[in-house]
Structure formats: C-alpha cells, structure tokens
Length: 345
Image 1 (cartoon, rainbow, N blue to C red):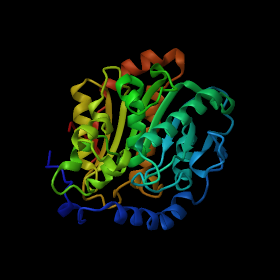
Image 2 (cartoon, rainbow, N blue to C red):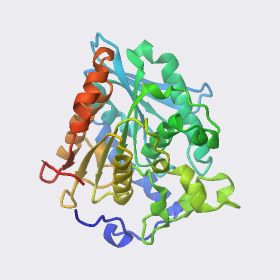
Image 3 (cartoon, helix red, strand yellow):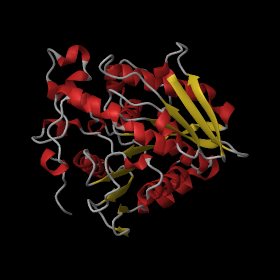
Image 4 (cartoon, rainbow, N blue to C red):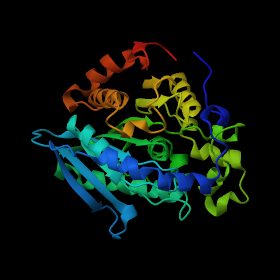
C-alpha cells in the first residue's frame, strides 16, 4: 500500500486556522447545494423541518424521508451533515438522503448546534436528542427503532461515531453529560464519509487543520486542559468496545482526513470489529472531501449501492438478522475503487 497522503503539501493547503475554514465552508456549499438538491426523487416521501426539541430553532430541525409504498417496517439511517463543526445544514443533503431512502430505509437528516457558539458537548446533546426523537416517533413513519444505523460526513460523521461509542462506553457518555437514548443493542451500524475518528492526527506536523479546531470544541477554548488528554475523549478510535457495531468507511487519497480514516480502519480490525471500506485512489478526480454528496459522480453512485447493501446486511428483517450478519459481513472485502479489485489495506 502506498504511503497515506494527508499533509498540507500533498493537499495543496496551508495549515488552516478556524476562521479561514469556516469562511470556506460558508462559501463553498452554494453551488454544491444546488447540485445535490436538484431533481428530487419522486419515489420518496418527504417530511421536512420537524422540531425535535421543541424550541423552534433551525438548529433543532430534522427531515424524515420514507420510500413510497413500503409495506414493512424498515431500518432507520440517521445522518448528520458536515461543515467543520462550524457551518453546514441538512438541506444540501436532501438528495443524498433521499437516494438512501429509495434503497429501502427510513432516513433521518438532522441539524445540530455548531461552534463557536457551542462546544462539542452541546453537539453530542443534540445528537442524543435526535436519537430520543427517533426512538419515540419513527414508527409513525414506518421505521424500526430497533434497527438503527448512524452516519455522517466529515464533522457530522465524527459526531455519529462519538454517539455510537458513547452508547458502548459509559465513561465517554458521562464525559459529555449524556445518557444514551438508544439501547446499544439497537445500534446496528455506523457509516463514515470522509470523517475524522482520530484526533491524534491534529498533532501531526502538516495536518490540514490547526489545533484551534480542537480548542474550539472544548469548554473555554480548552484553557487549563491538556490537549492530548482532551483529544482522547474526542476520538472515537479510543473507545472501541468489543460490541461496537459494523462500520462502513468511504474515503479517498484526495480526502483531507485520509490518514485518520486509515487509522480508524486499522483500529477496528485490531479489535475484530467488522468493517467494510470503499477507498478511491488519487487519480479519481471526483473524490475530493465529501464527494459522496454529489450524486452525479459514478463514484458517488457506487457509495450509494454499497451503503444500501451495508444497511441491508447489518439491519435486516429481525427474523433473518443473526444469520445474515454472521454469514455475510466477515467476508466483505476492502475495495480499491480505481480498479474495482478487492484487496486488503
């Protein structure tokens, strides 16, 4: 395997301070939002802007997407948008989420509060409130609250992974002041699109994000805290219980967080946690950070196909659940998508 690329030299960026990244995140999505929301999928039913807390704030709204004419209870895929923990919205993810709903699942697309107005603990509380809403209400939309898969891109994927880890690790849940609203036995999978589950990379020379991102997510900007110790509680990779659910990871050599994703894959395998991967080489020019949202790319369509297969395998109909997971997942290969030839990382 070629050496992972994750330095500022290789990505063409300087080490980015928070304010620059935030400005980029606020400017970039305008064209992307138009592109990923275009031509809504008419075989999906949309329930938009549901207030999951009751405070009428945009940050506490979610959408539910349901495939038309479903006659059975479906698995639930809960998704959190990215944006560097400082920006973003669920709206540009509508096309992506509808594409997954079309594959036979109920999809929940959620907003949450963001930095610098709040810290990571508040984002975790919001994510936990989303889970609470799902457990109490998703049956009304045809979803099965005992068959939940969490997912997200970039910062949203980080939140999804941290919520998953918190359900299995009481110490982590206590650190964030949450009592998980979903029983760990009902969290059946995790999806990571260009996410970051290993904050140790922030301390590496040449990593694209400055340490101020880490400080920004901590109370009082981390004053009085040992940053490496704090990073442990922000890194899902450090909290992999043996019962951690299967994970589907998509990344590329063009992804800012490529190295962090490889680290996560290695850690999951070292713990004998089932992991399915889709990794694109650098010569696939469409696969920049969070390319999965743009449905026009063949690489994105491959993600959707693989994601649908993943959810069906980890969250099948209850009668077939044990047999399906045991028989299929251990054989899932890592995939080098520039050649579509399976190989191990």
